[in-house]
Length: 101
Image (cartoon, rainbow, N blue to C red; front, side, top):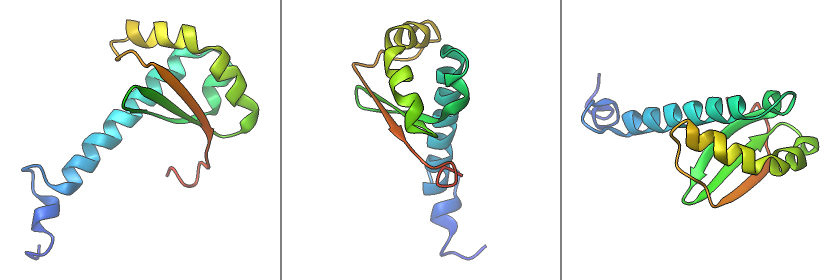
């Protein structure tokens, strides 16, 4: 390994280690959000993440945004039961699965 990449790959809070931690948090939250939603909404969630006090959910189609917003009270309750922090605002946006990996 060249010295140029060492800071990015080090286990001591390297940039890639931080990105890996963030990716794991997003994946875990996405799973919890999917589990909290009913069929068929859960199959259209691409990702979920917190931005301060806002839960941001990315879906694969605009057709599902309203249904997910409608379920926000139950979603808040289920996520709290799963140990997640309580969100104040919910933002549901449309994304592209190819952009998310």
